[in-house]
Length: 149
Image (cartoon, rainbow, N blue to C red; front, side):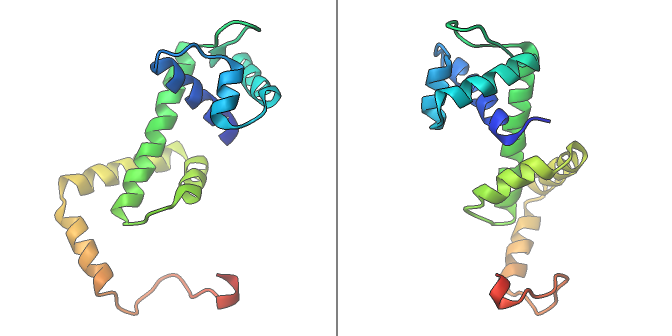
């Protein structure tokens, strides 16, 4: 499992290659708004883990393994976005990022099946919306003190 910062480097390299750009550490650093030194360190770690091919003063290339992982990470974020949309939650960037890091592959597969099921039966979303609009006082989650919200 990669750290969130290494995931960002990997995704940025992937997206840049997909856009037909020549990928260098300085370009990645500019796009991610981080120092070139920090970017080089991250790219080197990805190289040592065999996700990228990196040689000083040469364009960065992705390995097949890196390409596969980048696609998985992107799809993981897309899945979580779709799930949060179903729950009608907006502006949840920080929560989405935390979920992407914390959820196991097994949990993500179950969420994927739930999302696909709900998309197959859109009336579930309609009923959920009605439930939210007519919300009763029943709860599972205890109320948090106002000072801690």
